[in-house]
Length: 109
Image (cartoon, rainbow, N blue to C red; front, side, top):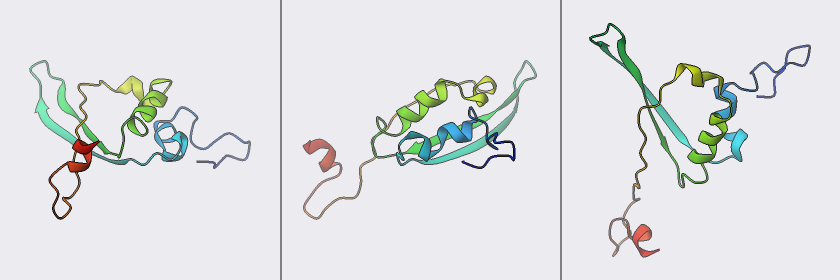
């Protein structure tokens, strides 16, 4: 991310999505991200029925996903090409300890 041209201008623009979403840009909050592109033909109006399904796994959305989204909202150059459709947060429990039950650490707190 620190690479610059000979005149000192960063190779990756300050408002580039990849720079703003990079782990180092938000306190090294750990996120595992995955996206899937889809194209499902064309809509009745002739527009492509296409998009991107994006998922992110993290320990705590308050310290990972939310700070990244706020950073992107302040000036991500990619935003003008995006239409956000929906969002959801799910708790996915880890494994079960011997003698325990599913999601016990989540429910015991």
